[in-house]
Image 1 (cartoon, rainbow, N blue to C red):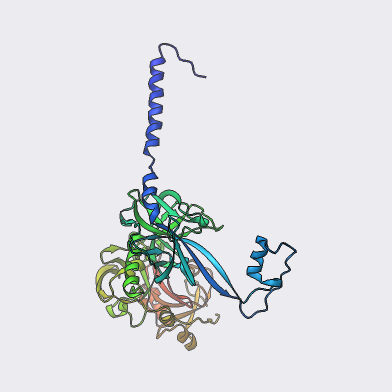
Image 2: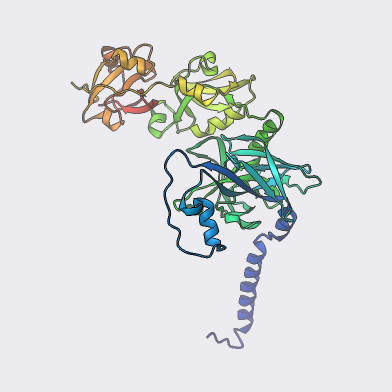
Length: 477
């Protein structure tokens, strides 16, 4: 217990006043979400889907249903899925829930592709409990965006914002239907921008710590102005529930997809025709770069815009149409959004010098066509060591054909202790280039290696069944 004398009482009162004032200011600094929620909840919808699943050709499992009243809820449920006598029916329905939001007064609704994928029936339920069957105007798996239409008029809509103006640390809010609980509100901050996920090449996600759970998918992410800045799409989780990381599709990208779905029913994307990889610190050093940046071209696909414009393996793409490519993952979204049939300015680093290429962007081919351009998988044969600690042999004709190598290259027949192993070169790899020079034979490799500066790092292009990859090889002293 604190005791104050007459002489210290004024100072104590001043101290307490400052403490309470600071606490009040702290409370005042927290955002007030109430007006935002009240103004925007009516335009956020619940989406339920039903899909008819065929049992398949296998014999159905037999289930013994214990004695229970015929009108029991559990009995009805079991009979629905397994039929009378415990036999699974030929077909049964599955249901799922998601969220969405209205973007036009005449009934256009935006949600995620994965919310309505393969659905036989889609029901959109509004905050006033009205329900409407929805038709799919179009859906795009690569961006995970879908556009629905319901037959209604004079509907509430949301105001769209600009996700590019978002700053890390800014407050954001989500409204959706987690686990089917309609119009649940969660809030948090933007924790990162331009985030790339392993399964999504064309979306620079907004990362937040807003609690997003199953059922939130497709719902809006708001800034504090009440503007939609993203569509909640994915979470990072090891349990299936929220673990502090959620990801939203930037609204500008989503609306570009929506416009194409609305006007033509599908989405066309720009295409360069290169396979790229990250520039590591070791590779940056081998290219003479002051820091790791850009996208390293590991392969140029035949008859592609990149090949026609003169892009080479080993080029590092630094900017695309004036936008800096800080990481390799930043390039696909930039290319995907580029207008098809228009020229793009691409700044590259080649042999230590920057230069700008003009590339006429083509439309991204279908997945099956892209897959046909990739080299087939193969098994390399097994294998005297050079100073790098590896044994090299000519590339067998069948392996060359399997890897789609027209000429040159050497097969790594064995790897011992040394620089090659440190660079993660493996037995069965085919070395195609070293220090941006094509390798024609084992003897040619020895000639090129003899000209390298001891102690330096040089880039080596390695062809593997999975595709090409650059590695940084240190030249022994």
